[in-house]
Image 1 (tube, rainbow, N blue to C red):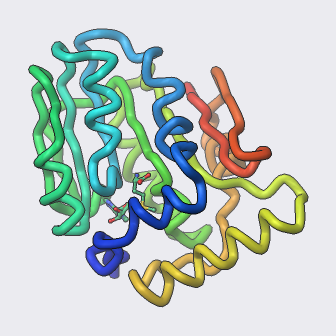
Image 2: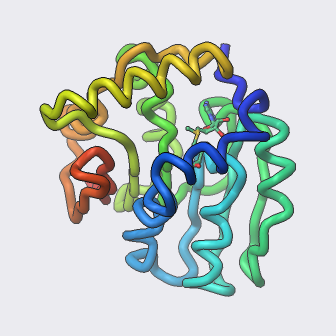
Image 3: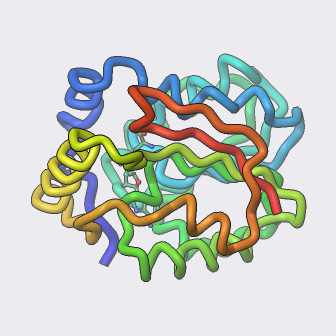
Length: 205
Ligand SMILES: C[S@@+](CC[C@H](N)C(=O)[O-])C[C@H]1O[C@@H](n2cnc3c(N)ncnc32)[C@H](O)[C@@H]1O
């Protein structure tokens, strides 16, 4: 059963702002200017849709975006975002269920993959792989543990909160970077934020 982030819609942005300030949105927009104009883009798990406004401030037009979000209230909020003259197709579903007619040149997964257990991460990854063009640019932003005690503590607390409120399945961070490398993706660029706790990286096969 997919997580239900509807229960967190009323506090999600406020809480993340309180803890991380603007870092979460800064991290997930860091590599967006690497996208080529005219690209077919898949955004999966965009939450309240802040990323749509961020991408629109870089590209006010010319992008073809498929925006997939499984939580209804998150999707309602996302549809209110300014998307300029970009073409945006909103799909209210789990990303693993979509059957798009196109292959995507760019995929953006902002704080999505940490929701899954190792086992399901691989399943979602396999499914996403099928939706991507051969030279896809995959921009992923997520938390990582680099050995500092407080990272483990904070990640554990966040996962516990979202397990209770939104029924996410993960009870520890899956090894997302390992998932990319064992699926033959190499890092093109990367940048860490918030004392290494957040990693934004672009990958290609
Ligand atoms: C941790 S939140 C991140 C939201 C947003 N990207 C941000 O950074 O503020 C994860 C989001 O992914 C969505 N989500 C979880 N599983 C999903 C799935 N299988 N398909 C599409 N969206 C999903 C949730 O509803 C939620 O909005």
